[in-house]
Amino acid sequence: QTDGLLGPAAIRDLAQQLDLRPTKSLGQNFLHDANTIRRIVRTAGTTPDDVVLEVGPGLGSLTLGLLPAAAHVTAVEIDPRLAALLPRTVEERAPALAGRLTVVEADALRLTELPGPPPTALVANLPYNVAVPVLLHLLELVPTLRRALVLVQAEVAERLAAGPGTAAYGIPSVKAAWYGEVRRAGSVGRRVFWPEPNVDSGLVSLVRRPPPPGDRAATFAVVDAAFATRRKGLRAALARWAGSTADAEARLRAAGIDPATRGEQLSVTDFARLAATGDGG
Ligand code: SAM
Image 1: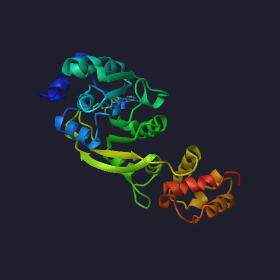
Image 2: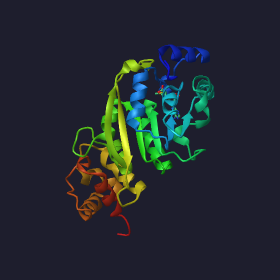
Image 3: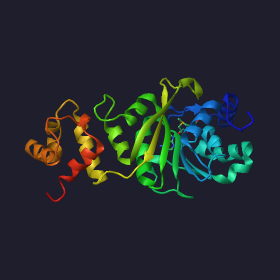
């Protein structure tokens, strides 16, 4: 490949150098298909002004695709072997771009700050078992992120992008909607990964918009309560959250919500309004 992207042979080589057996619990499925990598970079709309935050660069498949398109890439990798190999891989395959890369060896879920220029876009093939918490944590931690394009398990992509009143709508949908407009941005089959995962994947894009009026933590607390018992109407589901069934009913009515409705029907703005009924009243 002329563009330095990693194909199956390069992935095999790099894994061999590290004597790497991919770890399932860390979601280590590496992209080895240049077309998919180019598609992700294109769909992300990365521009030369962008500072990209990548979580889980792994062997560098996506990183090598992002570096030519962006001003800078900050890559956060939990696995010390992979974090150590990445600068060498970039130095070898794209030496002119090596100065654009910052590698941070860390658990993305525990990050409290980032070195380097403030990221404008998150682009990542996320570790599947922590994809939603990582996405939400970074949107909260890094207010300069204007958009995100993430590759996740297909079912999670569907949940993240679901709207009120649909079967897939739930906690991830509402929380992601707090930060921005979320859409599905394409499917990715399992054959483009090594090792092959046993699920299909999907791209999800989020474009940030101002959050609804209200407090995030208070809103997320009522969202968690509302979806904890999916089959109940909100009056019953929120009894513990509000203190009693009567208090739940009063707060729902104060927010203009029918107490018999279920959480699946409410938008993030409805949840924010409901959470705010606790403010001084
Ligand atoms: N970006 C690479 C690619 O597309 O080939 C690898 C993607 S792989 C699905 C996920 C990567 O995230 C792995 O390299 C894994 O070690 C890393 N990872 C897993 N959990 C992480 C965490 N909590 N914080 C940072 N990186 C993590």
